[in-house]
Length: 488
Image (cartoon, rainbow, N blue to C red):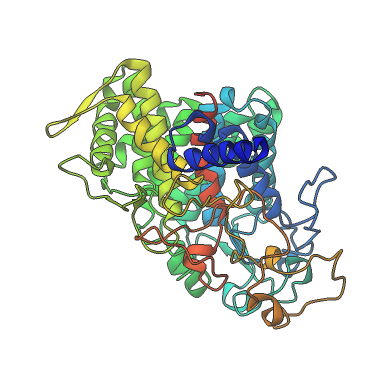
């Protein structure tokens, strides 16, 4: 009888925990999620893996990247579930990882070291891209149109490792200014721990930005089908010029970059923030000067940041943001969580700036405090970590129930240690891609594209819109996870 009563009591606790999500025992473990969100980047590494590689089912790959142009372009990250290095989203990811570390480094604890390592793995690669050939900025490796027809491990790649670059004749202000932003933001991260590396990053950033400014044009036009429709610069390049100048101003405090920021003039006020559209991020970044430095020259950006938040908050009369019944921000049907994590970063960061200065504002008749933004941000993070109608964590390897069939070549195919024979371009489709079995390799920390607008998620490997992870989804959530790790 005692055993039955004990079992019933245990069952009651489990049911209560499932039903009452605010119960202290059910709260997400932000520290665990933070560690896993950074570990994910090791699974995306290209090039020669370092001795401290923790994701052991990955091996060296892309070691001859750049050989086509007689340069070394090994390293960097594969963007998502494929084996291509797209520098435009990779640079945005790096900028966001750096911003996360600048804003929330003190709350990261032991993960600060991992965050720096994730940033440096990208910046080492960007330095090669920016300095290998005078007059060229390399912006990608691997023909996406060929790569996407194959389902093979990065270690087995036999597709064309075509090298792409922008130059004065074929400009790419968007990708160049984003690369400059990444290098400038990273220079702040390494300023105290590695001053000489920090100076190298900053010098290179300034040169790359000058190139973006001097030879204006969109990389989508220069690269054509190598950029579109994969990472087309739909918003143009003016947002990246502002974003890059804002980061260089933050890194140098130089009047030259201040004047550049101001000269870029009135800009769009979108209701989105992503690898493509940087306006909202630039406004929040620049608003810090208005709020914390009380510099009236930057009041425009504080106002624009206020306006952006009014477009995001659910009860605001000027809101243009939908929310699912389960409480998830829903922007676009393809890989929606990339927008959720990026906007959530802006919510926590602006909330932090507001708290430091006791700033509040109104969206029509709705009074907005730092806690208003914080609670929306927390709801998004908690939803991703499992507080949602399906009770599913959208972070792989976190919680008891998470996506098992993610759209990711390396994760879905047996590792070299298990299957040493080469798996060719077509060899991965049957039986692996089309299998209903869970992926053999767990890509710990990967956040997938996420549920649909009805909070549904089929966990289907072929459904890349919802099942594919991406570096920029994770790059943006590191900051909020660190923020909430320090707010237990």
